[in-house]
Amino acid sequence: MIKFIPLLIFISFIPYSFGQKTADSLPKESKEKKIELRVMPYVSYNRNLKFMFGAIPMMMYKLNSEDSISPKSLSGMSGIYTTNKSYVVAVFNKWYMSEDRWRLKLFFMTGNQNSQFFVDDIEEADFYDYGTKITILSAGVQRKITGKFYGGLSYTYSHYNTVYEDDISPSSISHSNALVVNLLYDTRDAVYYPSNGYKIKLDWSTYPKFFDNELASNRISVAANRYFQNRDQKDVIAVRIYGKFGLGDVAFEQQSTLGNRDIRGYSEGKYRGAGLMDIQGEYRYNFGKKMGLVGFAGLATIYGSDSPEFDWKLYPGAGLGYRYNPFKKTKFNVGLDAAVGKGDWGIYFRIGEAF
Image 1 (cartoon, rainbow, N blue to C red):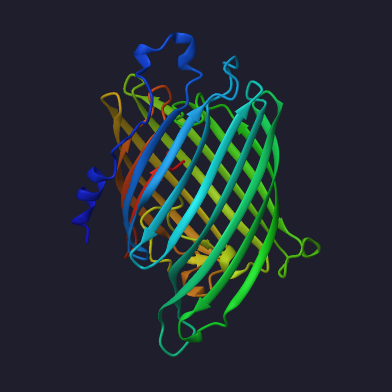
Image 2: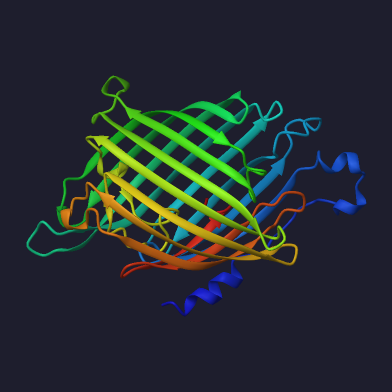
C-alpha cells in the first residue's frame, strides 16, 4: 500500500483562485484589503477510513486594513467523504483583531465516523468496528494579558451516537459540555508558519456534572513548541513536547488516540487511553517560492488504556511530507505527510503545519 504515497503527494495540491485580479495589477493600498480565496482538493488515504476525498475552500483577510500588527484572519470549510462511508462537513474560523490583543475562534463539525478499536479482554482479541455520528460546536476567545502572555476561555459542545460491531459494547447516545481555560505564551514571529520563537500552551478542560455531563472528568494538556531558523534562514527546525492527561471518568469518545499530530504513523486506532505524551522534531526544507519538504520523527506513550499491556510502552513514528503555499501574501502551507509507526502507518492531509 505504500506505493500509493508518491501519487497522493503530487495530486493533492492544485490551487484555485476566483474572480481576483493579479496582485501586481492592484494599488498597494488595496492589496492588504483584498480577500484571498483558495479552494484546495483533498485526497488522502488512511488504513482505518480508507480513501478520503473532498474540497477545502479557505480565505485570508484583514478584519481592519489599518491594523498592521494583527495576523490575517482565516476562514474556511471542508467537505470530505471516505470509501468506508464516513463523511464530515466542517466550518472553521480564526480571527485576530485590535493589534493582536484579541484572538477568537469558531468551529463547527458534523459527520459520521466509521472507525475501529482494539479489544483484548474477550475470547478473541481483535479489531472491532464502531460508527459514531458526531456533532461538535466550539467557540473561544483569548485576550493579551501582558507582553507575550494570553489568557482565554472556550466552550465546546459535543454530541455522539455510537454503535458497536457485534454489540461488543452497548450502543450509546451521549453529549458533553466542556469549559476550557487556557494560558498561552507566544513569541513566534508568525502564527501560521513560525521560523523562530516559542509557543507554550496550557489547557484545562472540565466536564462537570452540573453542566449537564453524564460523566464528570477533567483533562489537562500541555504543549511546548520551539522553532529555529536554519540554512541562512530559509529552513526551520521545529521541536514539540506534548502531554494530554485525562482525570476522572474519561468517556470512550474523549480518549486520546495515538496518531495524527501526536504522533504520526498510527492510523488503525489501536492505541488509545486516558492520556498521551510525546516528543517530536521536524525539519522544514523550503525550495522555490511555494514548495517545501518536511522530515519528522518522534516518540510517544499512552496510559489508561482498555488494554493494560499497551500502557507506558514506547511508540516511535517517523516520515516525510510535502508542502505547498496557496496564498500570495502569507506563508500558510497545506500538505501531505506519509509516516510509519510500530506495526502501522498513515497518510495525513495537513491544513497548516503539524505544530
